[in-house]
Image (cartoon, rainbow, N blue to C red):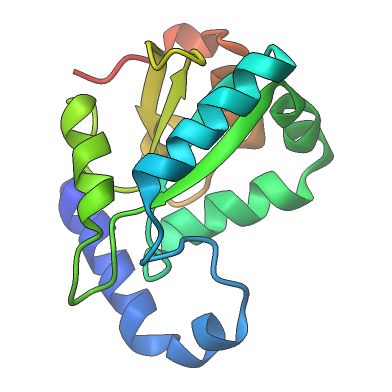
Length: 167
C-alpha cells in the first residue's frame, strides 16, 4: 500500500473511530483560524526572539498529525529542540470544509503534498527545510515516528543520509 493511501486510511479511521477522543481532547489545529495572520505573527515573534518558524500543517482528524504533535509536547528532547522555534499550527480544515487562509500558505510553498507536513522558515518566510512526517520514521512500514529523527530535522542535521527537502 503506498504512503499516501496509508496516510489517508489512517486519517479516515481516526476520524470515524475516535470522534469522542478528539472532541474531548484539546484541539491542536484551529479550523477557523486566519492562518496568514498567525504565520505573520509567528514570523514577527521569531524575528524579535532570533528564532526560526516551524510551520506544522495538519488537521485534528489526522492521526499522524496528532501523534507527532503529542510527541513534540511530551518528549523532553523534542521540547528542548523546539526552544529555537516559534511554532505555528496551520489547519487545512475539517473533513467537510477547507481553511482558505491555509491554502494561501500552501500555495506559497509547493513542498506541501499532504499532511502532516513541516516547514522551517526564516522570520522573513524563506524556506530552510521541509519534510512530511514520514521523514520522521525509520520503520519501513511508517508505523512509528522516531524522536531522534524529529530532533535531527529541527536541528537541520541529516542522519542516515536523510534529506530534508521535499520536491
